[in-house]
Amino acid sequence: MATLPTMEKLTVLPVPGFGAEDVVLDDSGVAYTGTEDGSVFAIADGGRRIDLVARTGGRPLGLELLGDGRLLVCDANRGLLAVHPSGHPDRLRGGRPDVLVGTVHGRRMRFCNNAAVQSNGDIWFTDSSRFYGVDKWEADLVEDTRSGRLLRRSADGGVEVVLAGLRFGNGVALAADESFVAVAETAARRVVRHWLSGPAAGTTDTLADDLPGYPDNISRGSDGLVWVAVASPTDRVLERLMRAPMPLRRVAWRLPEPARPKPKRTVRVMALAADGSVVHDRALPADGFHMVTGVREHHGRVWLSSLHEPAVAHFDL
Image (cartoon, rainbow, N blue to C red; front, side, top):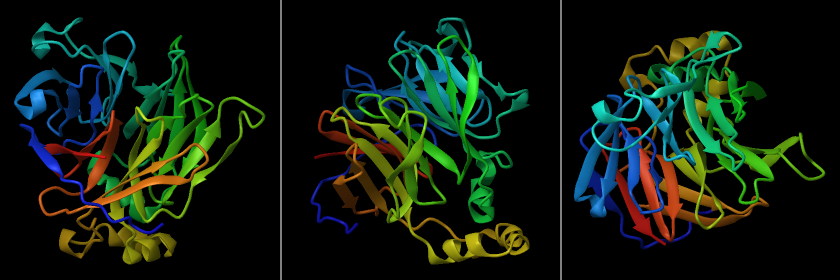
């Protein structure tokens, strides 16, 4: 999958918080993002207006829109939350975020990460690791614990584990016709597809494999494509470590930070059709913004977010 030459201009919009990990847009074009201090911001008027609309009390990651006007927040520490993004957080409907899912089968989730909302009200979401939280995400990648899960919360509130053993289950997206749900496996550099309807219903296969880097959040754009944020190019050291004996892997992530494998500066996103073919593969300069962990196409404009930046960004197709 070679990088296509691109000339897009990247526009960076600072936000008053570090680590704007994901981004979602409502019908009016307002963008929402969450930062590591637990804040959720609304960005309007081309970045000229930024409002604090919620505080989760944890670490917000993936964001989605719920059909009732609320914002769905995958809080890495607290679980699956719902907030009403209007006005100051003290004036939010209900006063505080509602916890939709905090535990699964009686055990607290360690790493609620990303989600997609089905038209029937079902919520598909990931718990990336059974062993490590967001503050030690590198440890799960290096150890390759294969403990990630894809879960479904039905409209009546029931929760089931649909896929287990994922290699750092991350982004989630539904097909345009909702015939399948896609989930990114970061450590495996692939996107798997679980069929919800049709002759293959209930089975799982691969939508895209051997990606040129590590996929993070994914989303369905207004163009119907599955957009994939490639957070970092493939790292040879990390690939070797994931195949090494477990004692060595455990030692590796405990090394001083300068000695650990780390994401390379890059801005790259891809868009996949329902058959897995690559429709867009865009790489942009990473001098002023890097490590894209979230991507959202909205009527021809592609929005980007980053675990390592106090900003979101966008470019036009």
